[in-house]
Length: 192
Image (cartoon, rainbow, N blue to C red; front, side):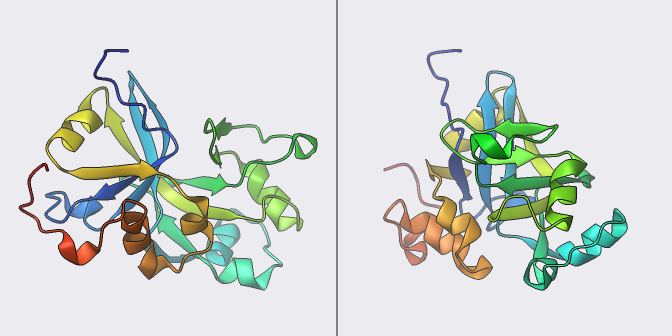
């Protein structure tokens, strides 16, 4: 870890206006992992046309909970877009963990194994969740460089924004954690 290392795990990355990469324009990313090898996160505010019901059909599972089945699946990022990632509230010790779960220190959990879907299919599983296809990945030092170039703002993540805030309000709500009104941002603002 270099002295310039920023540990951004369990933070939101908020794309600045003028983000050159269309993939991330207007995105809020929940950062699941960040270390000297790079970073991994999931975009939480870009729904795709697939619902959870459709996704479960594709993997040959039923999803009896209609409210859940109607929820959108999200574009988590441009890497491994055929793979599902389930971002969910931490499960208590009794609930046990799934086969492939990354516990974000002090934050949420991300599960990539089918067993979390099977649990949901059986009416169990985490109550608060967001499902994405794909993830956002950065090589070592890449994210730090993008932040240095004013590509992203960072703030401690607030789970309520992921699980309770209407999708179209998540970007503004994440900015408000920094006390920023989105109308005050312009693409050419420099560092204060």
